[in-house]
Image (cartoon, rainbow, N blue to C red; front, side, top):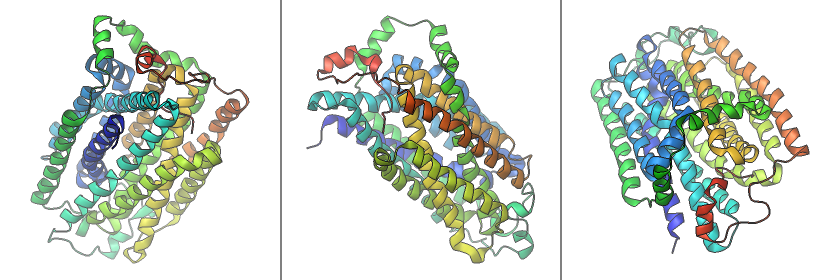
Length: 465
């Protein structure tokens, strides 16, 4: 019989799996499906710009007033609104729903992080184990289930778009414009790169809306409200708004956080490149939009498996070795993409790049989160708000110049940010090695659930791996 806390972890994981089956599939298709005037990429840029704004103050306010459970449900509703905006895409539908999604994005992720942490500490107290060990186990389960959402969302899009009767061979003239050989700003919309039939788009978006609503239902019905008392106490004793708002910026006085900004922003750059540039200028251009889902499925499957693998491997290798592996993988891919000329005859190669990218992204996500948790465990809310803010800024910049800069220069920018990361990250890691940050819980763990609730301020969102 599984414990109640473990059940709650599964509920959160399945809810996020269902929600991001929809959003992940839509994000992968935006640069190809809504390519007119760069509308799709512009909507993604607006999403992450809104996340930057919401990261500054919304997460602690919503979590402390609504509690983790209902903050998650509210955030999910914001994501579903974006699916409705894609039902009949236009500037007047995509941009407003993008703003709504962005405002709900940061509270959603912060509430998830806080909920899993509380559940892990409660279970550790119940079983007499260290809360940190249980939290690490719960986060591993979550990311293993969550990262597979890219597989199912993209599988849905590929299976539905394959029903399009207008699929045709891509002419050789168009293949000459694919990849970094051409500027990549004006891909000819011939053959299989044309937008699929509207009825197929409506079927796909309708399916995405359905799984998004299912996610909200799963969480609302089956997730326990573990922080109800804390939320009630906060509503009776509110903190000043300015104190909450400025906490994110006060942490910027810490030189370690400033030094980690390139690493954090690179996470946004590399994710946006694969979902925005690789899918459009390589896959859609040379194979057709119906292949985007299959290629991104490869990314999602590799990402999911590697997240689970590296989470266990990190305790033996350390963070630095894994981050070096991710940097080398991305460096090799960027150099290869500069020279590779995509052609349908090279079909396996189209899947090699997302597989390597998925492996690297698994490292960037798991290890960067872990590093923030270790360094700033005493200021967890402000630290992870900064993480979301700087990562989102990377997304915003990359999506913003997507329609103005040639693909070759985008690759050079990505390479430059990667090299800057390789220079700055070791400084923080070396300092942490020489001067370890003292843990919040010094040599002991809580064994009483009431004591745990009294010491809620010491709960950490991520643990040393």
